[in-house]
Amino acid sequence: MLNYISTRDVNHKASSLQAVLEGLARDGGLYVPEDLSELALDYRDVISEDYRGMAKKIFGKFFPDYGEKLIDSIVERSYRDKFSAEEITPLVSVDGRYVLELFRGPTCAFKDVALSALPNLMSEAAKLNNFSDEILILTATSGDTGSAALHGFSDVPGIRIAVFYPDKGISETQRLQMVTQSGANTEAFGVRGNFDDAQSGVKSLFREIPKPCSGVSLSSANSINIGRLVPQVVYYFSAYKSLIEAGDIQLGDAVDYTVPTGNFGDIMAGYLAKQMGLPVGKLICASNRNDVLAEFLETGHYNKKRHFYKTSSPSMDILVSSNLERLLFFVCGADKTKAYMKELAERGEYQIGEEELARIKNDFTGFSCSDEEGAAATGKLFKDAGYLMDTHTAIAWAASDKYLKAAGNAGCKNVVLSTASPYKFTGAVLAALGEKTSGDDREDMELLSKVSGTEIPGSLSSIFDKEIKHKDIIDVEEMKSVVVQYAGKGRV
Image (cartoon, rainbow, N blue to C red):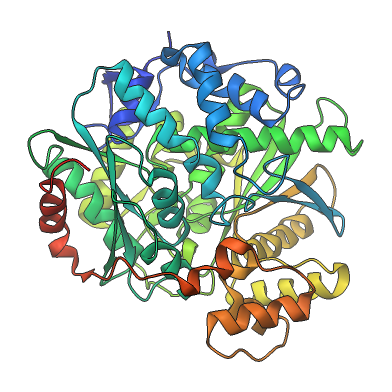
């Protein structure tokens, strides 16, 4: 039976149920499968299924303690009738490349894929573990996780959720999605600072107050939770299946994936897919001006002591990429990972060895792109192919351009992961198309629809008429007190 261990201590073990429930290991590490070889499967068997069938096989490998029958039920509840596309994550051929559209869920971002499943995984884990505490989910968000988590956990029995987002650090549409979210068990707090401030604050709360009051335990909906990460593995298999069905590749052909990422979770899911046996070629990490990951993948030097930039792709405005710790564990082992994380906390940087970097470069490469390069990619692709993409996907497309140029345009097919609807970042998208913006998201959505000939997603057009339910803006130092107060309110 597959066990989970902490990235910082191989003797810290947990079942898959415990790993999902706890989110973060008690020593501050992240849970990873103890033996990657136990995840191996025949990818041909997986891609013979529809999306839900693929999810069942993959979930079954990572979460054996649930049992096959319950996994089937969880997947059906998670994915039936929640996405606007029948295939959940459709693959679109665009100008010689492929775009994997991950934003067809209820909040129009890729986080919906995982956060449709995590509430079911967590609530069933609590039942199987005879876990009597109420679960309080703490989540830091750089924009999209918050709305997807609030939506996914809204009114789930036995679970409450508090989301912390950087005030002034997300788009107005992203903010409205969170602060208008209904549900008696939901709270959203703006934090004076950036995402790293909110994320560090949440992590410290797990260490300081794992039980903020009697009868309440903390867990996470960020991709530090393995239950959040595993559902993202599925769409790598789904993309491969679509390429096979289109006749664009043959069985066994490797496929490259370009992923816009700040916290390294989405691209880490691709790495896990490769470990399972999917023919993954290169994983191209696309960074914006906050290029800490691109620099690390080139030099092995991780340095968060740099200027923080607010960009037009705010969900990637991150300097501390939590999921990179999982990759470090698989490459360097627990002892070195713990030492590197200690250096990062105390000195703000660390340097891995040349052999370790070489192993990482076998699977990954990184490119950073500016707002201007992303905007140019948006405008050119819309002009040449009539395809509209959001600001994060634009960074990935521009990074894909750089990668293909460096590779001589030869080799594997390239899939660009599209992580959000362009209607979540209308001002920046309109500017990239050469249009003047009003500064009002509702008006800009209408203009973007008119200019592009595309339809505004209903879940976004409706947010402007909803009541603002969550109004608190707090300092980082206040996070502990608001969590303790929220936890003490009693069960909902």
